[in-house]
Amino acid sequence: MNNCPEEIKGIEITGIAYDSRKVAEGNIFVCIKGYETDGHKFAESAAKNGAALIIAEDKIDAGVPVIYVKSSRKTIAELAKRFYGNPSEKLSLIGITGTNGKTTITYLVKSILEAAGKRVGVIGTNQNIIGDKLLLTKSTTPTTPNALELQQLFNEMVNNGAEYVVMEVSSHALELDRVYGCNFSVGVFTNLTQDHLDFHITMENYLNAKAKLFAISEKGVVNYDDEGGKNIVSKGDCSDILKVGLGEGCELKAENINITSRGSDFDMIYNGKRYATHIQIPGQFSVYNAICAAGAALQIGIDMETVIEGLANAAGVVGRVEVVPTDTDYTVIIDYAHSPDGLENVINCVKGFAEGRVITLFGCGGDRDNTKRPVMGEIAGRLSDFSIITSDNPRTEDPELIVREIEEGMKRTNGEYILITDRREAIGYALDFAKKDDVIILAGKGQETYQIIGKEKYDFDERIEVYKHLKK
Image (cartoon, rainbow, N blue to C red; front, side):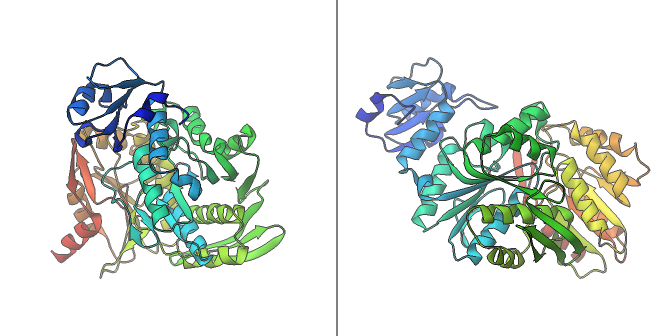
């Protein structure tokens, strides 16, 4: 093992843990420095619970052997990879990074690969699956699992016959070494817009984190219409990158785009040939997602006819322009849009087919980048016919304060709006306010079936809330 000293070889190891409460007899306990706490503080507790060995960065006294390393995060990744028999080396990994579109693209690629007769696993925001089988139910929120859970998932996917794994690779995962030691067959970059600046501080840092994927990818696919994509190509970290988009310089292009409420039709142009293409998801951003997915498949040798078949077969993704079935003369759509670009995309998408008003209900998460709040307020005010500013996952922040910060951007527009901090009450108001042919967008939570208030997670499924209110 590259990063671990010889002392490990003399100790019989039964498992690996980074949470002292989950340590079992004979485990290695790895001290990880996190946002809210430091694993070094729990080394003694881990030893009492049976840890046979502790990995640490800082000096500790735990009463069991300790090995000191420069990076606990890289070390746990190497340990987990070794413990589970290097499972990622038995798989072809396709990694998707970017601010928006990651989840949808993973499912589009899965559909294409399944049309080619491949067995495919997916790791991402919504769920971890292989075929239709759910793996390691997501009880935590990271888009990309921590290094230990990631190797566990790879191992389970190998045991279930997976050939390919399509996974979302977040900027946090790349910066915090969650995918350290993984080699990707293809890395895909969707776009870069403002998000996660509470963690990355600057957009340059954010892009540099995303770009790390291409240093560990054999081939790449980038949205070349995006300045971030052009930057990644110029870095030269990956020598074989397929440039996709609608504009100049793209090797895989989309033209003649026609968007309706039933989906998107367009022509894909590749190697001088034109291919009529259909996806069941509306919106120009969905076309970008489709050509990114197509590019990934082409880079691993899937033929274009199978690509088109797979895209046409792909159903909509939960929480992504998801229509809630209601017996009403207006439409309710749930979408995960929680960044300025995401919100603008979904509103513009709906405006493209809405026959009545577009009513946008949204908020912003607490303990996250607060600079995007007025920006999102301004976008909703400028594009929507009516906006309802409400709470999202306030976490430890005052939800009233978050709402007021969003309102500052709304005030820069002539948009009509109302403030209703309680999200349940806000949804009820939207349903009562809507008229024939209106479209209500419930933005921000998407596939989430909970709301985080303080440090507690409460059941909150917007689909259920809609049904409950309509029954009244």
